[in-house]
Image (tube, rainbow, N blue to C red; front, side, top):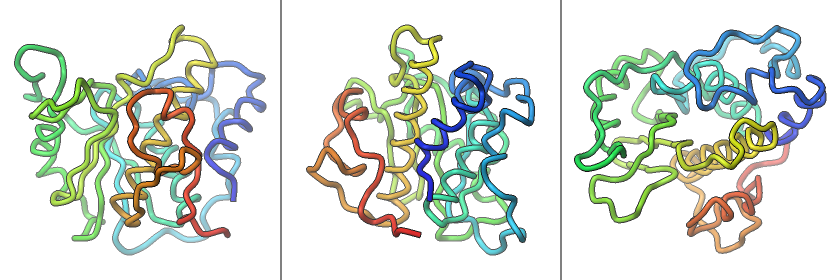
Length: 233
């Protein structure tokens, strides 16, 4: 089974190391123009023989500042790697979602509160479905125990939010920076699935995807891309 990192590597090779890929470009953009079919990483995987049925294991829900195309591609790649049904949907409206007083950070709890109706109305969800919200907004908890958070989890509501706001490197428009951004974002999304859906425990081994605590971008970059809990296929 190819890892997500291998998918990115192959895609760069196929596109001649340009930045035209729908997967390497739009984490910081909402709803970019579709890329040519020849540049899509979907072509690296054979089409599913049959439509999936039953409850979705994980919904990836982009907020309106995050690309729907990236969410859809992530869902395909994560489904392939984890053997789960991970499904991306269209961007969620955020009218009324406001930063916390005195700054530009958004409370993760406010995102979950606003999404209650959306989660209840998704037709292929059940009581075991997990919801991961994807955003470029800078997030924190209402308590603000930390300066910021890369991700936030709520086990009761079965929700996580992953933020790309603090994952950028300079210069942001370079190919290397975009690849690094995707790697960081994908790792944090995989960690959320591992911890909240598969019940993986955190590790003190920096080579383990579930290493903790993560205190900086350097920690994310040094994380391994896998956890022993992923079965070989």
